[in-house]
Length: 339
Image (cartoon, rainbow, N blue to C red; front, side, top):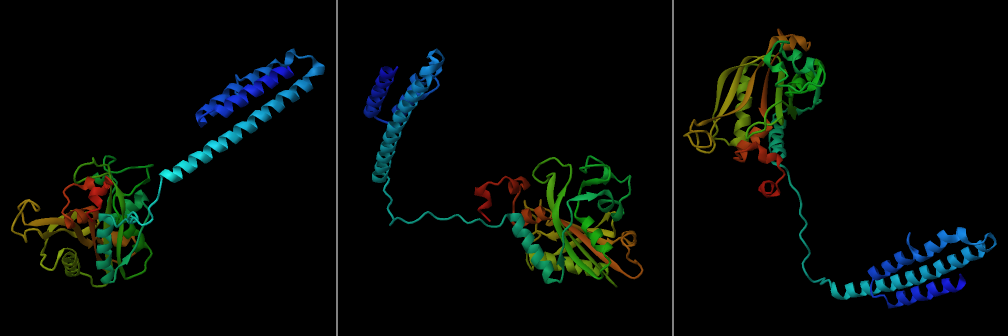
């Protein structure tokens, strides 16, 4: 057995010395020390060795294994050293070459548009507030004068989690929460993400953003609403912008209106951008319904107020003349880098 082990050791060391690369070295390791290797086979055959000879034979096998492993590691280290030296010679770094430019990100179109809106309203004395995206049915509907049988509560429009918990369909619940606090007067805008069961297309998405505005104070009138929104439109789209209010209906405001702005592309003459109408619809608004004030603990005989809501994506699409809302969410660097 001793002669056989010495023979295996000599042959393996000779193969290691004549090996030319790491792959060949690994093949030798497997053929000798692997599961089906020569030394492994000898260890498996220990059951056939006389009991009194097993310790001696086991020691000889381990000594042979250790000797082979040492030679393998030395040869491996030599190969790796030679490989590194070759890389250092071939992979020369010219430190005089200009460095690669570091790509620095910038604001998303939605973020830029939101910052513009916040800047305008903060300049008017408004506070920016936020609320939960997972809402209760009470704050999302009941507190806003939307009864149980209202079409907006249909599951086709709203993502319900349970009967009484849902993903908010608007940021108006934030207004109800602020009014409940009873800290008057109120001048806030509430931007945030909202959810509706809409098909994805050029102008719709099941997840989008809204900006709600709310003012509650004594002697607030429709004139204050119109003046505020006209100033907002001028600062956002330019001083030459004109505004137009059309009667509408929202459950939580009375009277209600939709506001249009004159097309800033053609100046109101009519073009492809405004569909030859000269006007572009931008937001919904109105005077806060007295019932909403009562539900939130505010005396409608003493206080009045107005509210408005605008889609953040709509502002971004108009501001940057983007014709497909889906472009905002595809994360295509070629598109986003334009802003």
